[in-house]
Length: 442
Image (tube, rainbow, N blue to C red; front, side, top):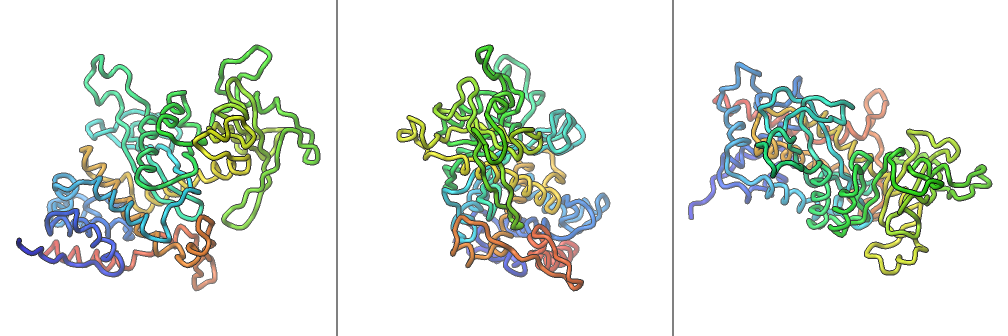
C-alpha cells in the first residue's frame, strides 16, 4: 500500500486536534482543506468569513485563485462524510476530562434563524426567524447543545426545509414542524453517549402535543416551557391556561408563601436570587399526573412576564404515586428550576458560533455544503474547550461550575470569558493564514 503523503502541519495545538480527524479523509487535499478551514474560522478578519476570506483573497477578484477554489471544492464536491467528522468531534469531547458529559447535565434544543437572500439556496425561504423576531427570508437550523453550566457545546444540527422546496403532492401535505426534527436530534445526542437529566427547550418548541409524544416515545425526560396563554380543555370553573393556573395558587407574602416554595438560584458571576416555584393544576397537568406543570417566578403576586416560567415536565413529583415505577428519577422544584435555568447556554453558544465563527456566512448553495460548513464551525468551537476549561478544577468538582478569573489587560480592565474563549487559537490561526496565503499564490 502506498504510504500517505505528509500534510503540512498547522502551528500550535490545533495540529494535534486536526490530526485526530485524518483517518476520515482519503487524500492529502482533504486533510489540508480541513486544516485550512478549521484554522481560518477563529482567525480575526476585517470582513465576514466566506470562502474567499478564509483563503485570504479579495471578495470578487480573488474568487478564482487556487486557494479559494481548493476550499470551494473541499466544501462542496470532495468525497468525505460530514457525519463521520461530527461523530469524531463528539468522541473527542467525551474522552476529554474537561468536557466529558455526565447524567447531571441537560440537552438543550432550539432553532436558530439567519437571513439569506434569494430562493435558490437549499433550505432558504420565507419563514419565522427567532433571532430577528419576525418572518423573513432566511434559513432555520435546529440545534442541540449539551451543558451542565460548566461547559456547553453543540451536539447535532439539521437545517429545517420549508414546504416550498418540495414538489407539491399529497405525500407532502403534512410536513413536520422543526420541533419533530429537534426531538430526533435530542434522542441522537443521548444515543451518542451524552447522558442528561432532561431535555430542555423554550416555548417556541412546545407548540403541540406531538412534541411531548415524540420525546416520550424516545424515552427522554423533558422540561419545556409553555406559553402562558396557551389554552387547554378544562371545566368552566377551572383554569384554562398556565397563567390562570398560576394565579389560582395561594400566596400572601414571603413569610406566608402558601403553595409556593423558595428556590435559591446561583449564577456564574457569584450572585444569587430567590425565586418561587410551585406545582400547578391545569387540565391533565398536576403533581400526581404523568405530566406536571411547574411555575417559577421572582414574584408570585405579579407574575412578571420576563421573570416567570411555565414548565411542563414528565419528571415525577417525589410524592407522586407513580414515582417508584417511573423510568425517570423524581425531581423536586429546586431540580426543575435548575434544569430549565441551564437553557440560556444555547443562546451563548449561538453568539459565539455566529459572531466569532460566522456560522451563517457561507458561499455555497447545496444542502451537503451547508451541513459541512456547520459541522466544521462546530469543530472549531469544540477545539477551544479543552484549553478554556480548567481540567484540574473540573476533575475535582465534576458537574459543578468552574469559576474563571477574567484575563486582565494592561489597563487593569477585565476581559469577558467570551473574548478569552475565542482568542485562544487566534495566534496559531494568524500564523497559518500567512502560510496558507503564501501557498495559494505559489
